[in-house]
Length: 346
Ligand code: FAD
Ligand code: EPU
Image (cartoon, rainbow, N blue to C red):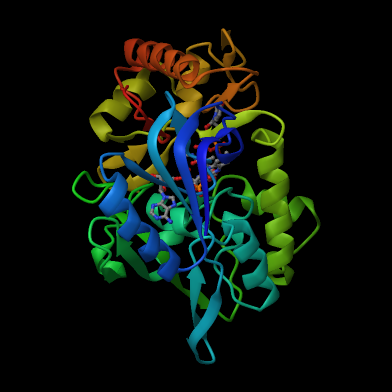
């Protein structure tokens, strides 16, 4: 266990916001976490607790006046397997994309479309990360947590986790910030069936002169990475947290109203009564793509991504978020909800 006082969080959030925490605790086992929690409850429980992962979906609006927890639990264990699938327990502190590579190399499939998404395995189960037609929650069997309030361990079954678009039970008000995820159990397939239905994915495969039936999982991963790198800024170079807002899911009445004015509006069908409208498209329509407000800007290749041009504070990014929300609301009558987690008083 490593405990640091008055610690800069600049390297712990991909926006590169220069906030500090009173204390940063890195633990590498459940026992270490429990030991720390005992000390916390007896000596420092007046300070707030915040569990972070790779900080790729956080926006620090001020210094954090409390204790930040960071998992370095990194074990991978096969729990059971048969001809078709494998059940694996994965430590929350493992980098999600390292696990994607590990799985493909072991002949375990399902995660390929989620290649290159930053962050840790534990947070992927909080966020229900998704890309190119796949959501991680569909492969998660159970999540094992420790209560930050009383140290008890609990195993949550898939049905209890309330997975939906960018949502899990751990984002609900009643559960938010109350648990440390320690292990995530994945069920992955042993036979590779590529998922190519999203956007231009099939066309990207064909452009490489590869027949879908000959496509390997590693080739699919490479295509996903190439596609992502064309649009999304590399956080090591430009501070960002991926999509800043969620894509709104709207009823058909609202959608038809937009479609009347913008016949080419892109959309994804959600169910017979709802569609998802890409927020990046709406933000671009409002003229924000590539525009800056102080040191915060809308990315010039993907309008859904807000970036730190250098030296931005969380408040600078929040100010841009607010004017973008206002523009979209005025033009489309839709209030965009941030996907990014705000830390501090809004
Ligand atoms: P953090 O941002 O540190 O934390 C996220 C949340 O999880 C917080 O609420 C935190 O309190 C909680 N948390 C973290 N670890 C634990 C734990 N062990 N126990 C309990 N709670 C915990 N997301 C997508 O879904 N799809 C994408 O395609 C995508 N692309 C991205 C591209 C870029 C360039 C960037 C920067 C981000 C992108 N994201 C994407 C967003 C982000 O990568 C995901 O939300 C990711 O899961 C966040 O992981 P993290 O480890 O960085 O978590
Ligand atoms: N679009 C524009 N202008 C833009 C951006 C997008 O017109 O500036 C249009 C595109 O032309 C396309 C549509 O919007 O028709 C969708 O764009 P894209 O495929 O880039 O995906 P997205 O909806 O902007 C979502 C996720 C991403 C995920 C990709 C791929 C959300 C909030 N975002 O983005 O996730 O990687 O699809 O599946 O759902 C993240 O969550 O951080 C993230 C990056």
